[in-house]
Image 1 (cartoon, rainbow, N blue to C red):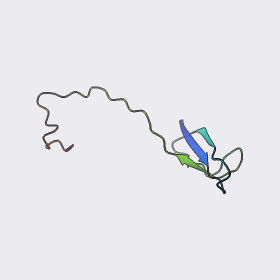
Image 2 (cartoon, rainbow, N blue to C red):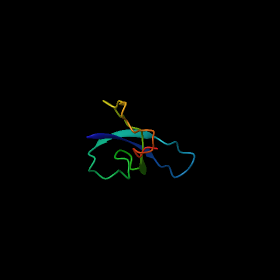
Image 3 (tube, rainbow, N blue to C red):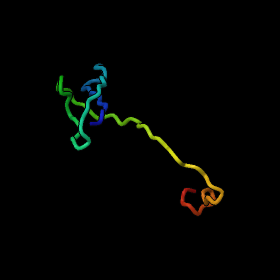
Image 4 (cartoon, rainbow, N blue to C red):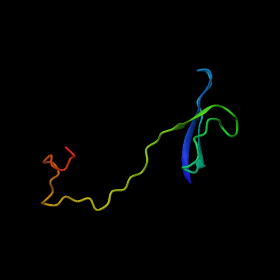
Length: 71
C-alpha cells in the first residue's frame, strides 16, 4: 500500500485548503472526494525517495563523450 497526499479544492478563496494522507493500493483510482467530509479533493504529486547503488565511473567509461546518449 502506498501513502498518497490529497488536498481539498475549496469552492471559494476564503475557505482554506486542507491536506491529508491516505493509504491506497497503486491500482486504486485517485479519490475525488474526501471520505470524511465529502469535499472535492485532488492528489498532490510529491517527490519520492531514490537510492543509487553501484554507480561508479570506470576508466573505460564513454560517459561525457556523447557516445553513451546522456549528453
